Length: 158
Image (tube, rainbow, N blue to C red; front, top):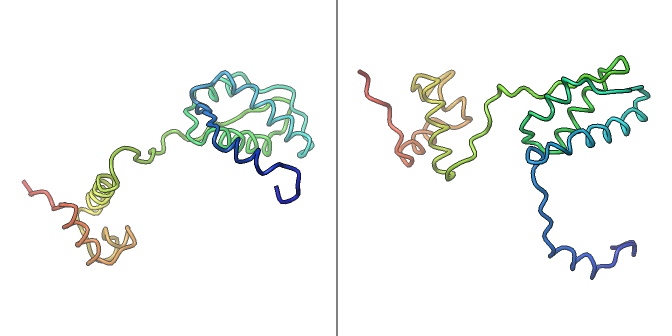
């Protein structure tokens, strides 16, 4: 707008018009076209000759959940292009065994669950080396105050 290439009134009119783009996992039919768009763009800049994408790679790409959407897909294709050494592009999808971040519940519930997980991992040791406070990057007194506020207490031994 400042350069006079885009009218400011048009920008504000378009800004109020919602455009709903479903996540990539809900439109897997777009994945092959997106992959080839990225391959064509990258093979020019990298000087690589890619003639096809391995069938297994394309199947894996369609089955992956794509939490990072199109940006993640582009990064995965770019990584594969960097290490490619022939005309067939083999694309490794990201490791799905990593635990996905907690996305449900209020901040209080998420914080309570995370602190409890860390305490369980440290066998309920709050202070000292490898204690929960150190792993969480908190002072032990701060962690104890949060535990009290969130109603977290060590389970009874039995």
